[in-house]
Image (cartoon, rainbow, N blue to C red; front, side):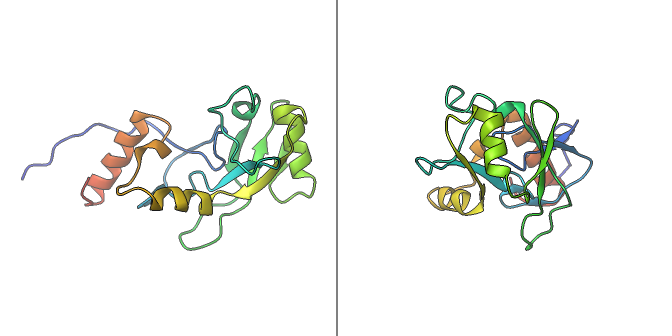
Length: 159
């Protein structure tokens, strides 16, 4: 069997918080669920308990205006490290600061809907459990899916 070039990886991006801009990486660990730490956190609408998503821009107008990055490198089997969120005005807030929910609610939707910071893992696990195969919808683009498959092939995994 001759190796075949599937393409090249130009850049790797991880999104620590669902529906926020993310961080560019030089290297990362790839797990069965994708890039380690990808979408580890989410914001939850305190009124209805649903995960805030940029798929509903009227409800969450400022979500894509925020950028999230891990304060430390995520480790396999460990709790997700804290996150730093850069708000649209350039202010940087940490996921461990006490007034985070209020600060994010004000920045993202001008306090029209109260938000709560949450670990995304349990929600994502329930979603994945209902599917037979690994779902590509957790990746933001077809390019990222191709890049992940390329990484898996390089690691000797079946795609």
